[in-house]
Length: 289
Image 1: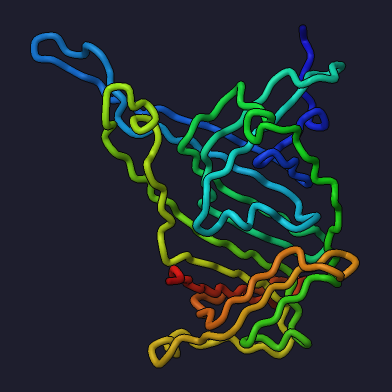
Image 2: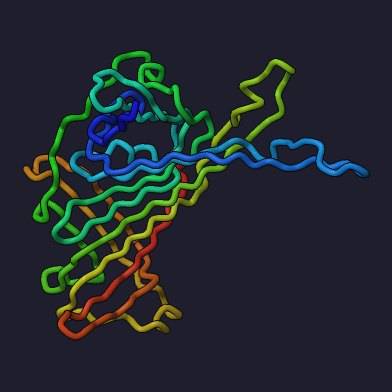
């Protein structure tokens, strides 16, 4: 056979639910080995030098409420799988997926003239590869996510205390959430305790969470801050990003950063263009007790 699996013959599922708007998927793993050497001979064999971990990335267009955003906090692990069939066939011929994945990065970006895009990074502490099917993840038939309520430029609102948005035009933004994980491993309790030997007994979310928002705007009456003003007090304010569907009846994504700190500004201009400023805000979130 010399067929191929085309993109429209592939589906991606998270915990048994099909995810729409996916543009690209990349999954990989690497095994770290260490050599065992002996005096008078040299290399004799090898040994596993680090826990088995893998990575998965997903890029999608935000055309409805993003279920992956719910995995940025504390919570249970989730699973995902790409199912595919080759051209001319109508049944699943293969899959590539993962068990026990945790979100470790989330990024949302948008610019004038395009739809918002989401990019997520996933660290996998379970198995990854072929043979992982959606019917083994949930024990039921997969559900398709067919709802499309894509936002328009008129349904995206950005407000910032540092900017007069009625005269200075924000033309693009990027919002990132870093949610790094720390896996804890333990020695097996017996020679047959294979689960404890392979998988972490606990996966913690490292606090505080860091949120970074970049805004690019064409300036009218905005004046940049002075660098040394930081010594007498960092500029801070509220940055709000609200994204609704095209019919404005429901929120797709909402980010409200209270007391976000302005940590960088860059000014640029060129012949034939307009003056622009790029601003970066940071916000840290502690664990709620």
